[in-house]
Image (cartoon, rainbow, N blue to C red; front, side, top):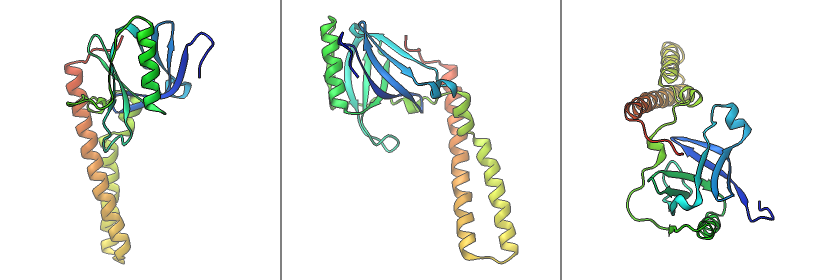
Length: 200
């Protein structure tokens, strides 16, 4: 979307830890911002992002990963902060942002295939109530217990082979998700002990 003054916006997902907030990135008045949409704000995802265009020093494309199979826009600011956005027509958005930054008097490096590792935001889990509930290790422990008891019941009864296979798969899945949930909680405790600087 574009206005007559040259300001524009695009639909985007903004990564805050392992949570992707839906909303829009906007370029207006020399400032790049992200605003989450109403549903995200209602679910506790009210984190916005804002930086002056002249403070953006690098635009790059994050490599694909198993967790995020599409390339994301990485905006690096003068202070060293990185913000990750998933947008449609990524290369076009990068070009438009670069033009806006140069027009505003800034200088930006554009790296479409950056070398070296990037500090992916998923390694710093979101500590919101919603995400902690979704990824709760204890919730999956309850599931693990339920499926284990169901397996015991089947073993004492008909021993249907298909049911045994399904229950075994559910037990393995619940165990893995419980382990991942507790590991995620440990990562959050570590990041709270050494808080990362917030985007300004």
